[in-house]
Amino acid sequence: MKILLALSIALLAAMVTIARAAEGKIEVVAAENFYGNVAQQIGGDRVSVVSILNNPDQDPHLFEVSPAVIRKVAAAQVVLYNGAGYDPWVEQVLSATAKPGRVAIVAANLMHRKSGDNPHLWYDPATMPAIARALATALAAADPAHKDDYVSRLATFVASLAPLEVKIAAIRDKYAGTVVTATEPVFGNMAEALKLTMANERFQLAIMNDTEPSARDVAAFERDLKDRKVRVLFYNKQAPTKLVQHLIELARAAKIPVVGITETAPAGSSYQDWMLMQLDETQRALAGPSS
Image (cartoon, rainbow, N blue to C red):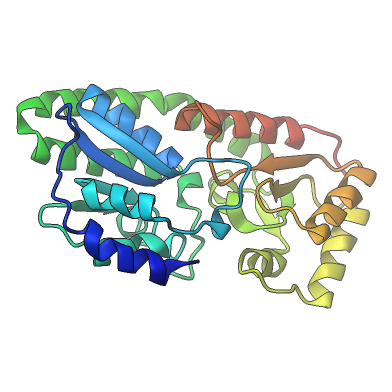
């Protein structure tokens, strides 16, 4: 990450004192596009939202800060990011572009998570309601004349999560305790909400941390697939490697359903639709032939 160059440029960007866009909207910058989508749902036409990580075909861990990103953060009145070590570049940019009155909403802080915990917090069903409430509060403070609008949109957003809650309950009630596995812990928080039993967690952490899994962990993963000890294999579509592809091929050869998940929402998709799509696929996979 070319953070040193970017932060030197940030010293100039920090001189920017724009709190609102030219059209009078509150400037919101979200590190990840699913948080940006929620910000748009809460803010409506009163906000201008920019999401930095928005390409579901790219590995977000390879992201490099650019001068354009720094300028956007410097101009923002509200900055929304994940935390827990997932997007550390945001904190560096915020520090280099200190600005009075700017509000930072950090999912990890709201969820009482820290670096070292599973950072994929958007797959925890409790995260987005907390984010939405924090956003409504921040936007109402910045724009008190429209407080009722933000409160109303918050209520609408929370109500819109009901289908997700119903789907999660249906899967949990039918498949609690089912053993599944994954190449990374991206889906881990949702798997926990579904009460699925996750295998091969040491392997997953190694892949997430970009380290080599032990030969023992690789062999155990391969045995689980060949012997059909797991019902579903989840994998991260945005971080393909030869080893991951090898495991996918083993799973398919053993007729174990494979579910691809992402760390970035598809373009034009709401957070709710994205989650429902992946839960629908998970439900279909779990309904497949048992071992």
